[in-house]
Length: 305
Image 1 (cartoon, one colour):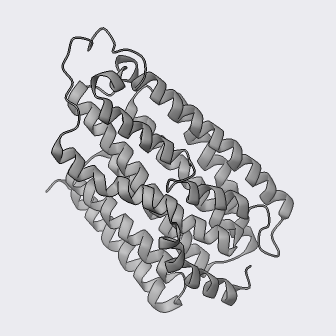
Image 2 (cartoon, one colour):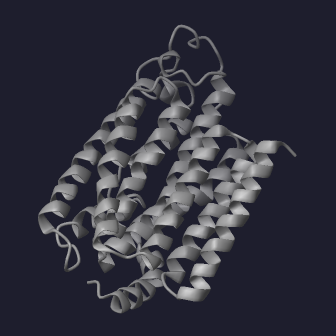
Image 3 (cartoon, helix red, strand yellow):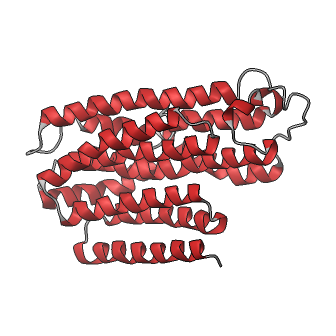
């Protein structure tokens, strides 16, 4: 076992213990924490097995989301909430702009993953039932969709032996099933209605229009505009990625190469994730009915909306 894997396991143990203590002692946001912890566990397993620095990003993202929920339940103040909203500006715009500049497929997915957590922070900061439910749903959707994008990136690496975007192209011609899978995952990531990503983004933006009593409506409506513009940036780097990788004709380097399309093992690995992305997009109450009661109970005790 490598040093990196040992570090992952120690981080997982400390985080799981801390979050569990919050659930037991505070009895707040328990459903939210356990949903996040379940996805965190999945991310940790992948990180431990792969020992990938890109997997580290996924793990740290979930650690940050858990930490915000812990802060929410212990150190609730107006300044904490408004600071969480301020992080949206940094957490959305900076990674999104960096993603636009990426030349490596997996790096682009990694930075887009960080950017999407801005919606989670905004939803929590509003201290409303819509916002908190959207934040929890967003973390569930994020784990599924970003996992799919990383799977696609790994498959591209396995077949083309490169992740350099400018060397790729014409995937829909050489490997059409994989190209459509990449396109579907990208659409889910940018929040297309009918897919899981939509229910983590749109309600979070909507909740910022009318935040909890005591919070600045003007400030949170500014955050709402920032988040809405952020969705345009997401469409920019994801659609540009598709245009360069999936559409067009194969590059000269690979035009005479035989690129294997999806195998049976690929379908078996990806089908459950795609199924959940679609099912949660069509019927989001599968998550909301689990989290709503805990969110309302917590807000009632804290005086939120």
